[in-house]
Amino acid sequence: MGVVILQKIRKHQKDEYALAEKYYGILSVLNNLKLTEREIQLVAYTAVKGNITLANARDGFCRKYGSSFPTIHNIISKLKKKGIFVKENGRVKVNPQILLEFNNGIVLEIHLENDEK
Image (cartoon, rainbow, N blue to C red):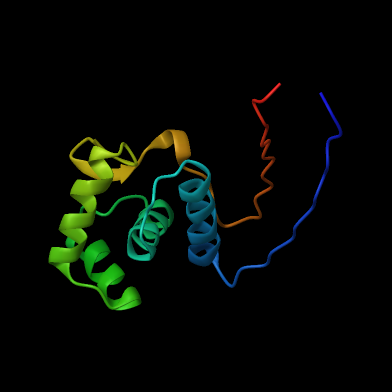
């Protein structure tokens, strides 16, 4: 293994929604998921709220992000196919494997390696 470079980046976000958006945006880029901004917003909102099944949660998302119920429905279908959303006990939630608490800070450790030898 060659030289390892450590780079620390500190980024402050205005609230847990913005922090969740940043986190899921990073996951999208690192895993080549190609999520749109609206998809990232829906994942972040759902992660903070707990689920996106109930009408009041969907209405809250629409008010916060200027979206519509049909848009949410289309995004939910796409994110379920990608495994980002799962259905548990009749509720659509963020897959527990990528779910964090966003009311505190997050420290990410990312290793990017070159497979060429």
